[in-house]
Length: 194
Image (cartoon, rainbow, N blue to C red; front, top):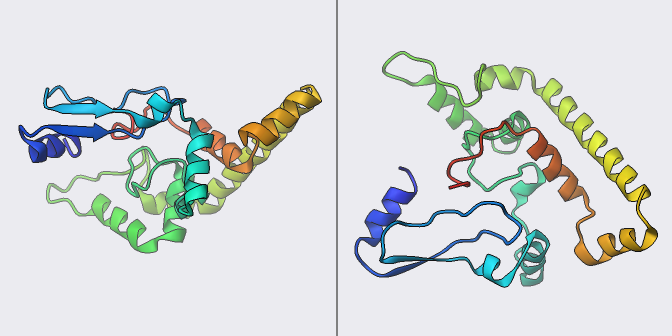
């Protein structure tokens, strides 16, 4: 309702190509319009480009990854319903103005009801547990690094070197992403996973 319907309304009956930035290694199809005048094109999938390729393209172009990937696993949707608790804590730290706006959305309702971004607690309650949430996140990162090291230790040297130097897949950023994905609830983001 917030993404697809406005896009289709804007396009109307005009012919349009919708370029969808889903990588070849992602297990989702993305938005595909039911309107015959909107043609979906998947340039990354069509070229077989995976995450490492996209990161390389961004680095080679001088753009690089957005700064928020230091502490986020998904796009720049600051008010994503499926953000991890750690990401809410980091939003409060990195962008207190946006965190305050999210708190305001929780609190200001004419019907008197209480709504929360995370199940079972308000953002203020979540932030009161900041140290606990950060500690749990750091432990998960440490566990993932140990697991990654054990997996590498049990591989032939040729395979380890191939992974490190060819794929660029052996990196802290992948460890962070794996931990954040591990912390994910079973529900995907409906905007990102349509």
